[in-house]
Image (cartoon, rainbow, N blue to C red; front, side, top):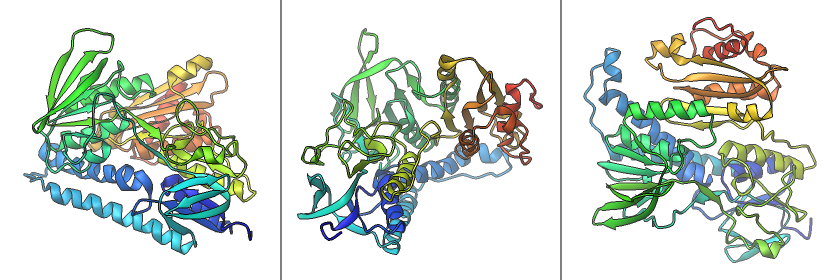
Length: 465
């Protein structure tokens, strides 16, 4: 140990990095975490998952009050939007959670090296002008917004923005154009639609939510249209110009054809994210990235260089905070000589719109490519709690192997789909069959009864449809 400053040095304090650092320290390893932001928590806590959920939650209340949902339940109100206060509660949420991580670092004796780390060798990094050596170095630098050629983001001007800028708009735009029909674009587009903006979503593909089950994508499109979001599918944005306080976009059919222009007060560029591997000095450590800019690892999250590990958005797989967290725990345990495992076949994903959209495992299309399947589907309109709460949109879909009945995937559109999907993920982790879920007693009345009914539908015996 005399040759090293630390047993473990984690680069990046996002969901993967800070969890890896805390777990390593809990296991008795002398640990440091290098982070250049003024607060811990990475993109997720500072400008991603947490602040967006604060705005989504607040805007849901406003929308319910402004558009008649409360009136249906006998509550007559005339809401007035206080956008600065709404932003204030977002900032408070972020401050509380990032401060909580700093407390956990102190509690677990994790040293916070304040600055951005850069490799100087296979076992050393430089942070704020000082070199540190570590027996194990974990790369957990996360991801950043993918730029779109021909569209220049400038969050300060609040005309063409990325996801960070879209969280901090000083006023509700009259017309917002969202470039990209994925999770982030739909969530943030939903926020401003609820607060009064006209929202148009431009998507290059023929459907929104790429990678999700086809039934989910189709029904989600219908629901969002009903809510007032306009979609221009199979369309690409080739240019964006700022003229005064507005943006003018040039749109072209994805398959080719005549261009058209579209004017907007705010344009949100949301076409995906890319791993943060530039500027790390990976070459000095003997590391290289693949064609997608990712760092390849083995099953234990070790790279091709012994003693250097990588987790989260910088390695292949879905760019999700909870995946990174699980990998953070696993890599720390592997470094400590234990067995850290992440089952990448059972990583749930959630879209926090209203209703929420969630899935885990295979889509029906993917499952059919592997063999014969059985599918059970149950509408939320048949669920007593959803109907009572005036939340009839959506469904639960259970996909099972036709021979073994083992659950291969579960897809949900419901007001609390993000919470409901945990049951499905846990069932799949244990290798459950649809019959196992169907014969598990579910509390009544709950949204989760729809999971039971969908599982019963796999074998053709649902009760409430």
